Length: 215
Image 1 (cartoon, rainbow, N blue to C red):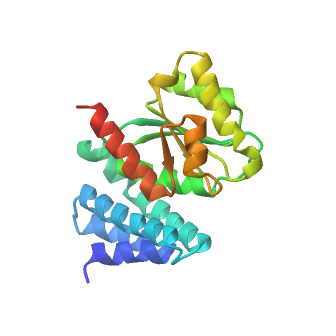
Image 2: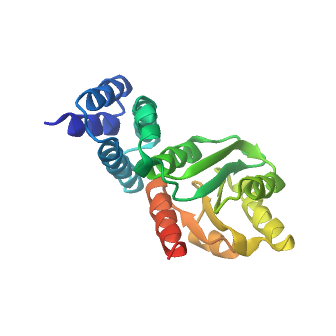
Image 3: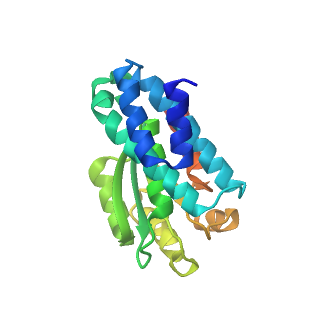
């Protein structure tokens, strides 16, 4: 088995130490960093798909995400040297709505979006609705990602969209919602553009959207 294959499996298994060691080894072996990143992205997306199919659960998903982050930290210097990998696909402002302190799902999505080539501005948790709009304007974002992990805080997602409408900015941004309690019906009722049912799906949606926009 190649170093690249072993690295992907280490990430899937959530073995952070092994992922770091193997990431270093890919660099020492002179593997192209874009090839390594593409492989890692594929493996982490498979973790997301397995989570969506309920073949694994949140703790396994989090371990895989942490292993991915650790491997990416080792690859970061090489990424900075690579013009193709650092080519920006889009600018994303993302956060968890006010009153909600949960960041697990958001952080997994951020990891996968960064790997895919998006520039991320992470607002963290418990974010005021107006702050999503302010930051999106400040960084010239393409996308606003709004996470809610509790049914009681879901109205905050709609509030962000209502603010965008009130300011005449709604058409300027692609708004994607995420979080365990979010459903297709809720997304439709808020007027959001899309729903990241899991991190892998979110990346695919946003990659496709940005590709269409650039035509």
